[in-house]
Image 1 (cartoon, helix red, strand yellow):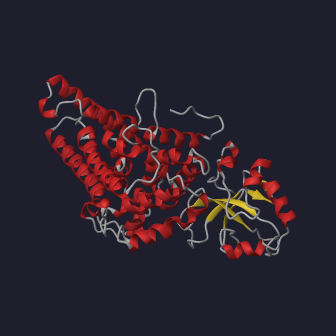
Image 2 (tube, rainbow, N blue to C red; image 1 turned 135 degrees about the vertical axis):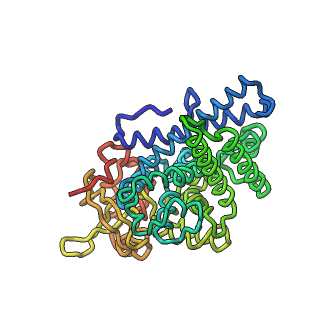
Image 3 (cartoon, rainbow, N blue to C red; image 1 turned 120 degrees about the vertical axis):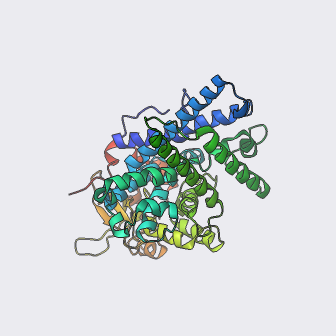
Length: 458
């Protein structure tokens, strides 16, 4: 596990530790990934549960209980970090969590694929929760199992579900949201089975796990991943042991736990080819995350805002629902959380200045998808840790080529002067465009005082 950094706020450390608990490695092997890898490696040497001795059976149940408890604790922490009492508070907290994951991630260099691989499942789980919320609010959910726990709650009432009916909201969280998170976290765990790893890393383990696989290899890997993920869910995690007094309580407990596991299996199975099913709650965030936190060696930070071009193409090919893609677009907008935006500021009289400034996307649900909600991080070409929120319009955002042309008239000397003020060293300046379309905010975010992008500014 990573050592807590004195250069991180309490929240940033929480996120870092959570990432480590999910897809990190520790000396005691207690992360979700460590537990799964250990299970897969030992599985082939174990007899089937039908042939276990009483002591072996007891040990098997204990291990399943530990895995389930660990996974449940992770899910509850994700809920705690990403949800509030109201819809707006939930969106602010989720934006902070998504943005922090992005800003902790490498956007250049050899470390990008490995770090993104570690971050993907958490990022995807948060998106899946927010997508589920919006589909419920818009009345697009027809899944009986979900509707049952909403108990005729209207889209408007759902905005303050936990305030208006805390007991029902808690039950909905337990029976629906936790399984959605579990499905998102486990969706690719089968890739760590030895058979899958042989495809990913080669028989000698020396091939790059992030290379592009041949079509036949991808198909075989998808099949192994799905089979082993389901096997891990049912065989390694299973149903937790009942702790209580009465037979009625026990029967109700096991009925609910079996229902949750069936729902997780349904999500995993239907996400493979979701069409218009509930599987889109996993599939659409999965595709989105595969672009934003890409593990490909061709990763290009500048292309992240083009993520919906990929999603729309997938929908066109029938790989996911266009309606659900459109719903996610309303939530995230064009620019992902934590993305570094470069914009032309307005002067005191509304005129556009002869320079550009930096901002970071920090809000979900932009009024217009191409106009991100951002926190200003420079003013008059100087960095600051206490900027205001601002909506960056298209005609001010240098990501759009038409806007960039407005500054193209500035002299090379003036552009170099701006770049010198906004870059930390001469070596960095050599690698930057004179007129940048976006900026990499990881170094800025590494300063503790700059990690409060979501604090309310009076």
